[in-house]
Length: 481
Image (cartoon, rainbow, N blue to C red; front, side, top):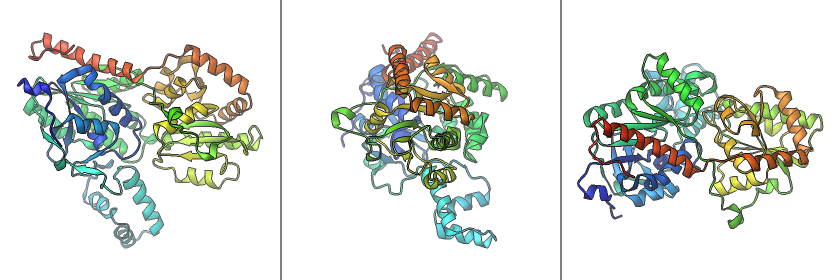
């Protein structure tokens, strides 16, 4: 593969912007949440930063960044390739102590871990071990069963990033999973570059009971280190920015400048052109849609119980009506999914889908009766914005940033009031004319944010910080138009 050197290097100048694609390089599965944000911003970086931007990867083992050529970067952004950087992603547990380190190693082998538990006098079956192994390794770490589809970095044209005080590092990915921020801080002391990071939410810090055990410790450490590493933070909502500033003050640190930029909600909808239709289980059915990772914070339990009540009270027809959960399975989902699958009232009428393409998701948005979003806390709530962009009625929690999305075009309920959810779902399922009135209002009044507009806000804020630095005499490279 031939290396395409950015024209900036041909001028003999130092690297101006380096957009980090480390998450896209190592993530296996559909681009969701944080991964989609990195993808959509990277897709537009050249448009807004021109030849001043290069794309790179963080090599955790070496503790430094490398620049890759635009051809590989383009393939990464499209999701067509992956790059094996030679190390597994950072554990969400960051094991401390000999036993935790040993436990992490033993979990690689179900047999070894099973024997270790028996020797410790713990009654545990092999099936339970396999569940733990799948949950903690397969799902959380996102380590693929096979890396045959990932190119070794040695097969990718790359060279060390030329970093100095004129360089802005841009990171919109899973820094807490793929980077060592202490090593980054040391790298900054050596080269003096500036670091721009996207902050999605501080849920593990503010509401540790809503996240998987160990994740709160990892993210608390991460945000504490980010306060020292980041020179600029981009928050995806006012609620997130308020949480970030509050956290900084609580730990006694003055927060660095922080901007708020909205997320885009336009999906690349080519489903109609390509003939992508509904899953066979939904053909001829009327369905309510919830798009979200399945985990406790997303509050699927309330919907499950509300739907069961709708069936019991005959507010819906279980032969025709469906509740559809779309999202990958996260932590602590076993009891919920088992109950759904064996409960006579829900085993046929609640459908769980995952690993859908954008086109398949677009088909679901277009054809659903309406959408629901009962999450207990959100840094933004992108599926809510996506649903509104399709002109859909949405019944939502008003928690945190969800109150910012859609305003009075969204019906807001207490996320824990099961009976209120049941009554409203039953009402709208059986009243398509009322749903149509809401849809007309949403279509007329909602102003969706496109990813182009989101990228414009993001990169404009970044360049405004460049202007400030230039005025202070710390920049020698002109700010691009």
